[in-house]
Length: 480
Ligand code: SAH
Ligand code: SF4
Ligand code: F3S
Image (cartoon, rainbow, N blue to C red):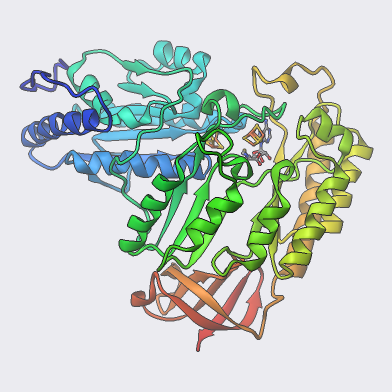
């Protein structure tokens, strides 16, 4: 028992073995403890979840929030809370550094607040050397868990509250998917929906397969059931999430393709928009393109990571497509869905990248003309095959290429922005405009941002907006 927390302990008896019943059992215990702590403190116990990384982590954080709220914690907007959780990312080195930097500053809060607990979870925690470093150098952390056992959060909170030392629970991998736990969405009208977990691709630069485990798909009926419930609760747009959604369903007992899943989701009444992320070019099928062409709900936006335009580098990256295949795919997609917005991810400075290789990337960028692109400087991730390569590109060369690429990407994106000026298109209203209270902000099907005069009651609705003017990368419109 922590000295500062004089909890009246509850005996764990008849603990259910099956999930999610077991977690609901621990939520009840946790709720009692949180109420005891609030009584000692004289005010509600507060929490704050900080999320790093991708949409998978964002969705996982919603699951953490769902449980925290269920057991009586109250969300606050600052890290001066009684329970602070960092849901971490390790895809690039700078993601890690940010966490270490901020932990020091959290410790300052903890020294002043005897009720404070600090929890760390997410991809970084799946790296043994990270956990070792925290265990030895950041001893004020209370709870560490990983990506595979996040569903056990309620049980882990109970363990941590009852323990007087750091609680660490990390699994190497799992084949388990636990359904029906509480989730608290950030937005009332849109939601991420996991369709699969993990990744089997092992791109040679990437740490994700090591920290997210093997690919496993959710049962289609569970996905449909979740979306139906979301729609009943006001959701009109879903973002289907997976590291490689195009390989969805391969490992199911009754295999099903991503294109087939999309067709099932399309049938859900009341659902207006379907997005998905991320598509791997190697698995993007003609069947999927055909479904996108005929769909009324799939948004006109495809994120199709290129990584490199050089076939030689793509091979070294283990991406399993080449430049020609990628360009053919883009042609096929544009022929089927002419007004689709294309976005991408590009890595600069992969080991052994020559000026010629880089020019191939620039060539693809000029040929495809992306609506926008995320550009990354290659980051060496320990344990990945690329990290062992000797021919790392000098920093100044990488930086110079990165700047050239960024400039090209931005020039093209700004030339493409505004293509729909003058047209009237449906906009899903997402929020009140932060700068100007008379405006609301929403998105077109192709993901472009539109600001227009309107009131808060429009949030979550899809309305027709005339795109009057394009300023930089967004439109100013008026509702019709
Ligand atoms: N599953 C997705 C990508 C997830 S990671 C896909 O295959 O497209 C998101 C992006 O981070 C990747 O597309 C890649 O561009 C970038 N990335 C991954 N590992 C990286 C590394 N070691 N250095 C720099 N960027 C990296
Ligand atoms: Fe990483 Fe490649 Fe898997 Fe994407 S597909 S998560 S880049 S290994
Ligand atoms: Fe980062 Fe993990 Fe996503 S490493 S990008 S949070 S899957």
